[in-house]
Structures are given as structure tokens and as C-alpha cells.
Length: 151
Ligand code: ASC
Image (cartoon, rainbow, N blue to C red; front, side, top):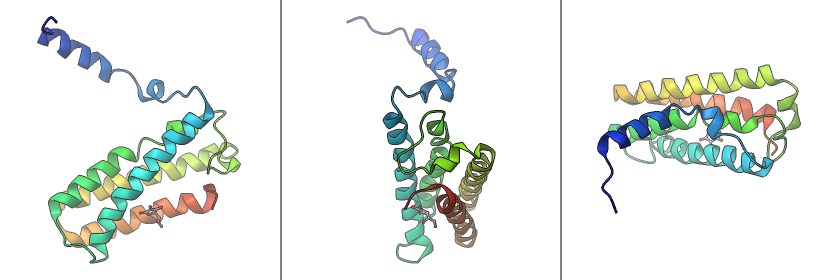
């Protein structure tokens, strides 16, 4: 096998980053959209849980670990939304999402902002700031679940 030319590899990886998220998030079947968005939420929940244990005093405060978890949540916070495109009604999502898109997008924007704030708070290494931002992020999760997720 021929050794890859590193310049070609670099060009290829640059081109890949130019593929917009909207292209990578097209789904052949609506079940694929359910799986995609639910996977993103499940991962966020796991990483919220890790910070939550610290906030509740059930786990020791390790600033570097909290930073890693917050950075992951901030990245994941952007992912589910292209999974709520046209013709993807169903799963645990209430049909009203597709009737009040602007309101739903308002919730997702607020959540993305809260997750970015949590990421910034984690970088300070200050537990009180983490607690405050974690509470706000949890509220943003809950606000959307109350209106838009089936129990
Ligand atoms: C979490 C998680 C949620 C939200 C919600 C906040 O960590 O998994 O679904 O926060 O419980 O009220």
C-alpha cells in the first residue's frame, strides 16, 4: 500500500470540514432522525449527570473533569436540532413542535446559549459559577421537555 501524501491528507481534511452540518444531518428514514436526535440527548444527559453529581456534592469537584464534560455538552447542544426537520414527526417529540417552529427554535437557541455559558463557567474553575450555570442549563432542558417531549 502506498504511503499517503501528507499534503493531500491535509487538503482532504480541510475540505471535509467545509461540509455543512445540514448535509451530514439528512436522514433517509424518520427513524434515523429519531435515533440521531435521541442519541445526542442521551449523551448530553450522561454528561450533565456527571457535572450534576459534583454540583450535588455526590462527587468531588475536579475542575478539569468538569471542564471536559461542559465542553462536550456545549458541542452536543448544537446537534439534535437538524434532526427535527420536515417529515420527522414522532419518536418522543410532540407534534406541536412542527406547528410552532419559531417557539421551538427559541427554546433550542436558549439551551445552546446556556450550554455555552456552562462551558465558560467551567473554564473559570469556580464551583459556584459552575453551579449557577448548571442550574440554568438544567432549566433550559426542562423548559423544552415540559412543552415538547412526550412523557
Ligand atoms: C439533565 C437531564 C435532563 C435535564 C432535566 C432538567 O441532566 O438528563 O433531562 O437535566 O432533568 O430538569
